[in-house]
Image (cartoon, rainbow, N blue to C red; front, side):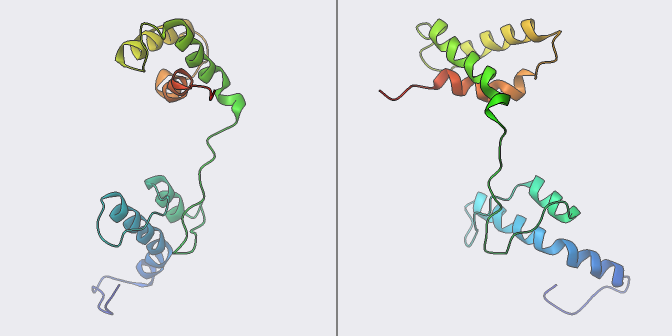
Length: 141
């Protein structure tokens, strides 16, 4: 707190809890200012999830002037079939849908849900962006 005043109910437990979380909340505030294009905000790669983990003590808090490390999104083995599905769909439907749009998304979503309904496959909402990445991928000539 910027002043030394504390309410009459404030005790050492409150002060200890505040000391544990205030740096994580400060980082959250700096990121919020950046996201809202307010003056003096800083890009810290800080998400709500980071703040929660930092407050809980399950994720370390980087120095105040350093961003959080980038997130590892998974291995190729986890996404290969989804990206491949999108890439193959582009070859099949690219003439009809030269760019990703609601029509091709709905067609692929419906097909995915029919053919993976009984399987232990990921839901469309979790794979859509990977499928889209495959659909939109254009090899460099």
